Image (cartoon, rainbow, N blue to C red):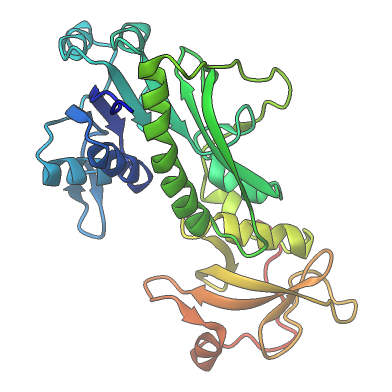
Length: 315
């Protein structure tokens, strides 16, 4: 059996999710001639400029990194075309690829997307799947076109979303799955043995970017919905509620029965079980501003939230 072709590739990605695929391509023996990533951005308390996870990994691997603010500049497009690529692999890059960039590689641009397309096209497919109560998701490898995650599909694989799945754990599962699928997808594309198929026209949904505002817990909502919210927004931006002058993040919860007819937002007991529109939530792990995450017992030793306390239900 002949060995798969060693392809001349560019890699375009930014977060840790993408860096996992970069490692898989290197392990498969492909030639990554250039990495592209978002420019360094201020981060942390000191707001020092920090390079992306892909940029950091590419530096460690000795791969040159380009960080253009846009690929619309004809000079950037010419530089990309001059790389003489077999293909480009794109994973959570964060910039729009204009048609000249999409058309430059011999085999086109191939994307690793963290959903079962056409469900959850867009920026936050992992979190939106959990929020919606989906019972499964997966990874789709597609050839890119000019639309938003609308290109024809090469490979896909499904995974279950469990009842305790968080955005963080599902992120890691799908990152590993994408890294596993990209290698056979490129091999099949190069050999001409893998045919792309159009996405279904039905079932299209869009995964808009996350905002801190939508992570606020509204105790009027059912406990099951709020539990999904906690899981979907862990670790960022973190589901939260206001009490006094503090914005407290909620990192883990358990559904619980509702006791009595107190209004939503009422603390029911000394274990920080909160009444919701339907049912209740027992808070397990929280974080105060400027503090490390802690269990609720630790919180309650220094922060009074006795039974009968009414937490703000909405802003």
